[in-house]
Length: 453
Image 1 (tube, rainbow, N blue to C red):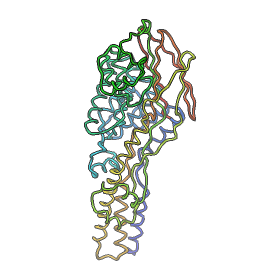
Image 2 (image 1 turned 60 degrees about the vertical axis):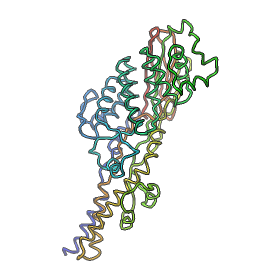
Image 3 (image 1 turned 120 degrees about the vertical axis):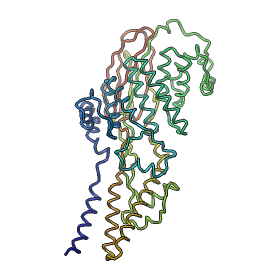
Image 4 (image 1 turned 90 degrees about the vertical axis):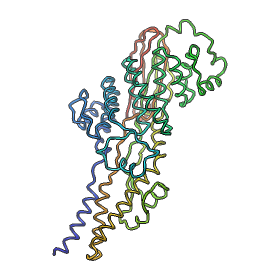
């Protein structure tokens, strides 16, 4: 009886291990997504506070548990969407101190494997696009608070991060942060430094929100980088004449800068593919002998893949005092994150296969350790070992899911005084935001509409 019961017990263990995997990050935050998709950001905020173990958005949680730095990033976006800029800036700054940048270009397969699977107790490592976008969103917070000094500090942090990533041969698209840094130093009266940042933002293309300030600053600044010089030379002579002074009344005008963050970037989800397909995609990014995979009974590879969202908001029309204003796409963060992931995907699959090879070796070792047992018992022992290790390989689906998929800008020079912005969002949901602004002579106002839906 004892011998006949053992296979049944092992089978039960296998079933439990296969079906009892831990909930992924996207599972745990699902209730927050539901609230955000309904436009109920306060409820989403309350649910995030429960995940963080705090009473409300004014309380900063203990960030030592690994997943909390990422949850604080998510909360910062919802706080910004609710116009709570000071609290959002606090959360972004606090989370930034606990983040590390994941190097997707040079990490060995074994090291990378520890970050794509269930080691969620580790510090969250942010991909380059997320790291640079963090500074961009925080610059928006400080600008909305009219705190140029705080915005300048964040602009310098952005520069430090971008320089570090450049040194690591990353090619992250940083037009969002570069443009805002240019705006900040323009308003601080540093035209040469502003032009350097605007030159970087030219990667977004020849946008009107770039052309007008570049031409205006070129009249009184000496800086001419190679890309900026080529840009000015490409403009018609009537546009690119830095010697021409602006009209006298132009100096008294103020500016409105509207930043629109719409939709959400793709999120990570567990994906299953056959081992053979994974071998073809991973190429040479595998360590160990893949021949041992032939002994595996469970030949599906599970790894974190990107899932594109069906965003509810996809664009906007803006009117100032009843006149329609141009809205331009500055950065497609969703596309940048997808590009970054696809470039790293062979290494991610290589790391996953490397771990799978280790599982196969362990399963075969368990099987061989029972040489005196009958074949069915040995096979079951190998299968149980394989299933146990597979159960531990839950993909780490953590990512900054509330990062806006698209960042649009609307920049308007206006006469000083009170004005009213009407922002009508487009897509499956079409709410309208009415924003009063009061512009001092020669001053500015930065405001934002964030719709993470």
